[in-house]
Length: 324
Image (cartoon, rainbow, N blue to C red; front, top):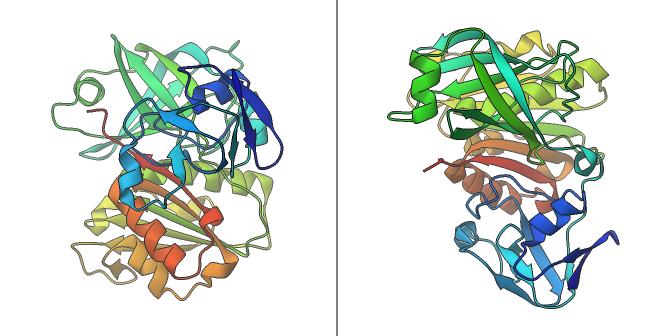
């Protein structure tokens, strides 16, 4: 059995045939990850020393990552391996639980976007960090959804669900679900969350329901009264009616920019979210970016913003990948 050594000195053992990510998780050590299938690219790590072996295709490495990088959800080790990543502290100590839950409320925000509120058992000790996601389970169907709220005293969690044509879970939630239905959740999952690093500007980029974990992080900011930072939210959609949340109710001091690909509306920007961030004139060298949405948007945003001064270590993302 070989060791994995992270850049901040944290070590853990990895068994033959076990992915580096699974080895970390089994040792209650959190490293960056999201989809766990090699598609989102969030668990990318630079190998400083040692040999590793791919166990599955590293799809997202074709999106422009440099040589010497691997995906920890796809690789095992063949020797002691040194990686230029750090553990994420608190997230690693949160237990992943499988719990029953019931639908508390269903609210259509748009004809194709549903706000689902779930209530957990009073005795459940479900803890999560704003930005993480859960897996929702119903009749053997399992789908991943970001939690759209900060931790609440009533233990309820909110999900923003986009309607998917011929989607099994989508069909149930949009057409047959009703309050008090019994489901299960498994979580928390993922590592998308706020990191304190001294940046003056906090830039959020979202497309579609990628606004869900960003809403959760903003709510957490409001609860903790984080000051002395400038908050910018760029939310991409096709039309203005697709901007279905009033984020000013969470924090009135944020700079909110709707970015519309097919509409021209006052106080909005036409085009793509990453281009809107670049044209805003925000000093990227003094910024941290949190991006959530499609794989294509995240890849394009990372390449464009890093090229124009953003530190690669200050770009955090959560890519929504299709269950298919």
